[in-house]
Image (cartoon, rainbow, N blue to C red; front, side, top):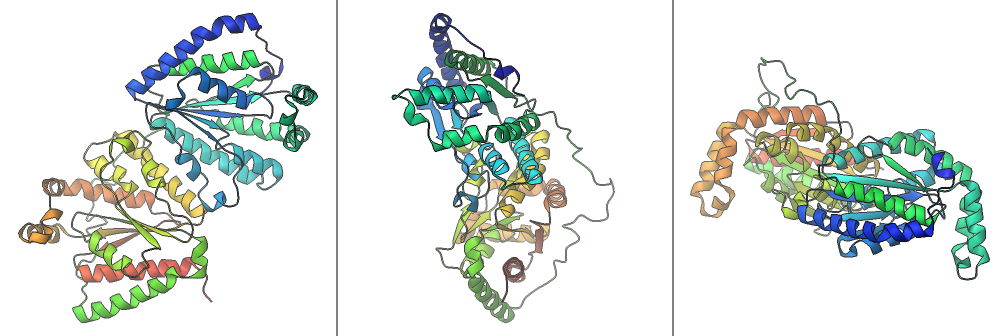
Length: 494
């Protein structure tokens, strides 16, 4: 991938000075147009070999455009502290909203390359991380993020000559230290790993732009002109041409759905309920203080039909824990800021560090449930969401998170009874809205969406636990018992 970038491109100073004013004006105008339209975000990745002008290019882009609307972040290989979080977590924190630009000096490619050339990752692990990057970038592009991936290159000879020139001048000698010499020594291994990475991740929707960094004027003009072409392209970013399977995969005639097949007759009498509740709350309290949980995060997801008892079940769960251990995140319709970001962005913000728990009262599954049924997103959006959600949960579990997902199910008859009770009970009237009644009219559509959601996202690392909750007492105890059982399996006993 680097042959054409190693031949020594040059631009004379007169040409550079003649072209820069018009380029700067066009970039600034294109940036303001992007800000006004707010139809997409632009994320610029700055990668390449040492001393190829990456830092200088970042400074130039910030000087040529309005830095108030640019977020610039630098990323080195991950520290041991950062490895406690999922790999992509730190990048989700800095993604730009629609209308804005982010410049990432170093990116999600930095640590995989570092680990590959230092021997921390073998070839198989390197390939797996590159596959995760491909999925991540496809998802970003489909969500309206334009990726501009710059690789600034120098041949080994040019790199050696540049370091010698810098070291010989007392004004720039400080720029040549042990790190730069180590990069020169490891040049061949680095470029071999980079070649593999770029070839396997130069996607049609997010290609790599390799730029010869041996001449400052050529490097800056080329990067600026390419970025201008991206900003001036008014069409929406191309959506990956991935095959979309049919929405309905089940046979046309089925005796019962997954939810209809549940046993809704199970009951717990009040006395037994109180004993069982105290037992499992006590066990969950003990498990929350397990020494091994200091190195694991816990993510508990609650979904279910309206009035299925999610809130009351969560209250019984949190009653078992120290308030410093957990956080409850109620998920509603996305606000304006959240709509300006890729769909999963708002959930990444709440992933807890090791030793802590988060409880989602509704979650990222809204895309394949309410957004699907209510037509709030396209079929292509909710169909690709299954794979994106599975990849998201796999990344969390790989980083040590324990994910426990509950679907609380009730019958239409029990839901109707609870709706009417809410309407006639003053302190419950805030729980019932016209939207609840409208959702009830679409029960068969939600039922089918739930069944497909479970079929496609109940994985070994994050299985669904479906709890019949016509009897709230039985459902609460079953949830606490199931969560305790999952934690016992995940944490070492002894």
